[in-house]
Amino acid sequence: MRSLRIDLSGLAEAFASGNAEAAFYLDLETGAVLLVTEETRRDLEELRTVLDDESATSPADLAAALEDSGLPAWQIETVLEAYQVEAGSGERYLGVPPVDSRQAYRDMEAFIATVPNATLRERLRRAIQGRGAFRQFKNVLNERPQEEQRWFAFRDGRTQQRMLEWLEAEGIEAM
Image 1 (cartoon, rainbow, N blue to C red):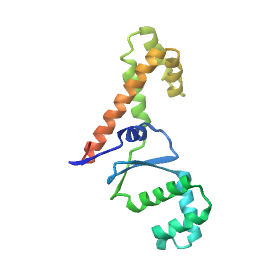
Image 2 (cartoon, rainbow, N blue to C red):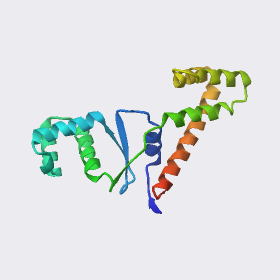
Image 3 (cartoon, rainbow, N blue to C red):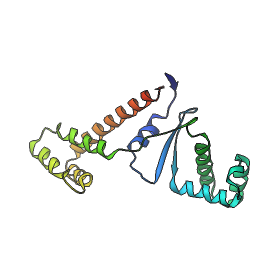
Image 4 (cartoon, rainbow, N blue to C red):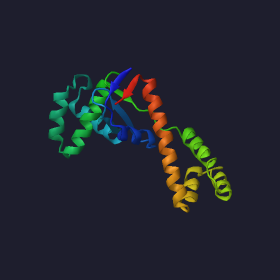
């Protein structure tokens, strides 16, 4: 098993994120978690079009083109990160699995089973039936701040467990 100092809070955020317009990657050298949005990928592709020959685009060519692009510094950095992820995908960068809505739904079901108040437990069960289950669940919990806080801790614990299982399956021990 390979030991790696990992930004665990960043990785937990990646595991909890439900953003379909973005992907997260674990840097296997630094332990950092990188976010690559669809917008950043489009910026990278547009830049390659300007450079004309995608196969000849070197990091130096890309950096020079980015400097001339007029993009703000933070955006230049995100495009360079997207390039690095693309170039090192499978070797240096490991894609973090996207949130599975079925797992999130099962988390809600498991939490409901722990609710001591029978009335609230039944309201939550009804809330997750049919369309808008996640929103309805949150709305019911929003009325009970203590239970809502308990839900956040429960959900975070389940996310942490999935994250650690994923790391183990990838042969990585977090330091």
